[in-house]
Length: 293
Image (tube, rainbow, N blue to C red; front, top):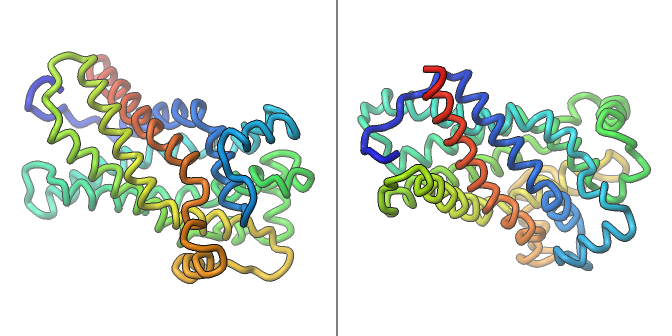
């Protein structure tokens, strides 16, 4: 904002809608990188370069494969991203009241981000699991569509299988959201105050991109083991179960670097993606304040 006065809080349903629009905008733009990231994380060796993986997928499986499994994240993207921002704002109001604080501080921004991340994780686990199964090249002949994958998982592995990886997902989202919102607060404090709307958009994109990059640096190891846990189709012994033992197992068998498999694709998506999220959320929120309040 161009003044020091905080913007008028949006009602929850407007926060939810703004977050949903921001999330779907981001995923439509950046989804192919998510497919590359998942393939790299499931791999225990071999090629994990972004360009070479893109070429290989397009040449051998067709361009549509870069959007395989997108139905699940599109369905969950509205509640997922809406929860990220709406829950963050709700927790901010709650914690300010609880701790008697007049304004947001960086520790508060981190605490609200972690809380929003945990809330978000609980909602999205089944959708994440189906998406991972659809993105795995090994499952190309196993599942014909997102609906088919969901039906087969429930029939062959039981409904509770949809919550495999819940604990790892909570770790992943708590780390990313805490880092994302905490860094956004710190970066915005250091940047000169925007005097125009374009400057505000630029500031939001820069802060969101830096926040998204830092969050990705924090949570990639948890994301790798989450992918491994959720990628298990029920056939054969289950190698990965809980986050901390799985982190240790991957590091022991494949080296510490394996915990950052898919990092480049992930950071290229969630760095700029974090900027896109914040810019769209702020733009839609401003529009709603102007026209509906």
